[in-house]
Length: 102
Image 1 (cartoon, one colour):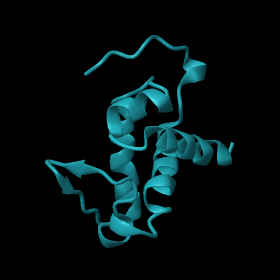
Image 2: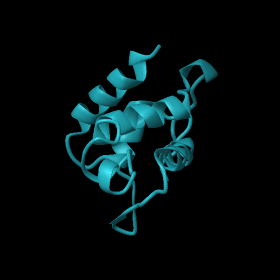
Image 3: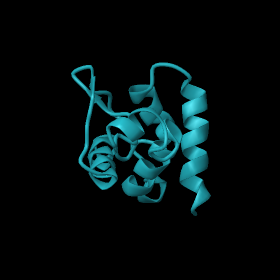
């Protein structure tokens, strides 16, 4: 995995809040697609398959564990690793939802 540049603690994001922002972008907060059918708010795949979760909370907890792997990366840096299409759209939306509750 690529190494992120050193950042100060004040630049770090709250991983749970970031997971919520990702779920808001990816599935409209569990209202569309795999958010509904799989309780998979963040659109997480493993081995090419959509993950299924028992609850929304379990989905968010897994998303937190994923974003924690990228800490202290910025949202833009995570997007470079996580997204394959519409990267700027993903960055802008996730940033918007992240900052919405500041």
